[in-house]
Each structure stands twice: as structure tokens, then as C-alpha cells.
Amino acid sequence: MKLTSKILLILVLLLGIAFVVQIAGLHGAYVSWADRAQIEERKIGDDISLLNMAYSDYLAARAEADQIPYGPDAQEVIALKAQKNILRWYRQEAVEANDQVKAAYDALNKAISDVSEEVPAEYKKIVDALRTQVQERAGTKANVEKQVADLLANIASSRAEYALDYQEFVLLEYNQYLTQEDLHRTKETLYRYRWLRPDLQAQVGDTGHMVTANVIAATPLAVIIDKGKRDGVELYQKFTVQREGRMIAIVDIVEVRNDEAEGEVRHLTDKQVRPQPGDTVVPQTFVGGFGTALADR
Image 1 (cartoon, rainbow, N blue to C red):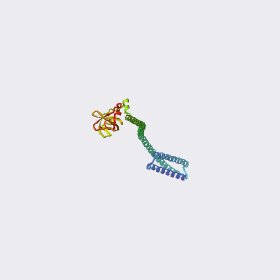
Image 2: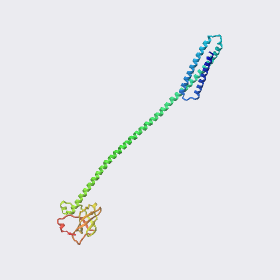
Image 3: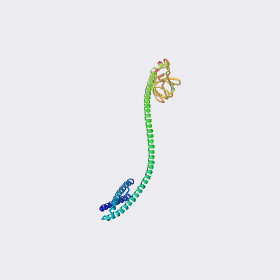
Image 4: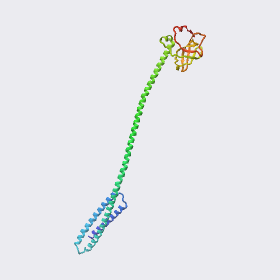
């Protein structure tokens, strides 16, 4: 019994020392407050359970010792009573330490709860602000993408319209070219007709534009007049050269420029009288039988 009491006392002392060390470690290096507090609370509960078990064993031993009021075990009973007092003191210390730990744990829970209430609120505000910004930027991005898509669609539509317009322009230009070629051929035919068959002009009433011009230069075989394409002078058109109201020659226009034209002398009324600068030139009007009466140049 004496050895058992000593072992029990040593066990209680070791548990008390371990408990104090754990409490010191709890106050000295606290890392995860909520988890460490729960762990320490469980350890303290385990220590209290062990102390209660040791105290129960002590009470059982005391009850057994009380059954022997006198005898050789009286000294051992006295020692056990002393141990009882020691164990009561350690138990009181453990209870006080447990109360302190609970108080620290409650304070820690309160601080954590306060922080947990403030942090989520601030976090929620930040998250809401970020979500709002993300939604705004997503909306802006969608609007920009829509505008870009609309612009690209407009560009594609404009290009398609331009292609159609250009195709139509090319077609019109080609048609204009064909029309001009046809007009050129028609005029060429008309000019040649006037040149080859002047006797038909009186019948069809076509003698060309009525243009009055003056000779600005002359050679024995050609003249240059001061009227051209802008004034209505036509290629192969026949003109009569007059001086003082009298016809002296007939010329065929062989080259037409914008402001002047060149004609070749075809007939002379008098071989001694030839055109010269200052003579008047007018379109020829056919008179029946006149062609045979004119002398060759």
C-alpha cells in the first residue's frame, strides 16, 4: 500500500507538471487559437478525469485504511492523509487552471466571433464591389463587342454595296465605251457619207452644223480655219470658201481639233484664185449640177 501511494503521488505530480507545461505552452506559443483551445480543453478534461480517478483510488485506500485504527499500518495511514491533503491542493490548482483556461477560451471565442463578424462583412462589401465592377466591365465589353460586330457588319455591307456599285460602274463604263464606239462608227459613216455622196444631202436635208469660220492659214492644197470640234465642225464636212460674197473653193475637213480644223482643197472655181487668210468659210449646201460645173483643183 505504501508503494502504491507513492506511485500515485508521483503520477499526480507528473500530471500536474505536464498540465502546467501545457498551459505555459498555450500562453507562450499560441498558433491556431480555436483549435489549440479545444485541444487543451480536452487535455485538461483528461487530466481532471485522471485526478478524479486518482482521488477515487485515494478515497478507497483511505476507507480501507480507516478500517485499521491501530496497528503496523498506522504510519502509512498518516502518510496517506498527508498525500490526501497534497492531492486536494493539486486538485484545487487544477480546477483554478481549468477555470483560467476556460476564461481564456471564452475570451478567445469572443474575439474570434467579433473578428468573424467584422471580416465577413468587409469581405462581403469587397466582393460585392468587385462583382459590380466585373458586371460593369462585362457589360462594357459586351457593348464594345456589339459595336465592333455592328461596325464589321456595316463594313461588310458597305464593301458588298461598293462591289455591286463598282460592278455596275464597270458595266456602265463598258456600255459607255460600246456606245462611244458605236457613236464613233456612226459619225464616221455619216462623215464618209457626206464626203462620198454630197448630192444626197439636199434630199435628206443633212448638211451638218451651220458654222461660219475664217481662214487663218492657207497653202495651195489646204486651209486651216478658226473653228473646231467645240463649235460643231465635223470630220469630212464640206465647206465653201468665200471672198467678198463669191465662192472660190470647196474644202473637205480632214482633221478636227478643239478650236480649229484643217481642210483639203477639193475644187476651185478659178485655178488662179486660191484661198488665203481672211476668207470666209461656211458649210456647203448642195445645189444640183454644181459639182460638174466646178473645175478640178
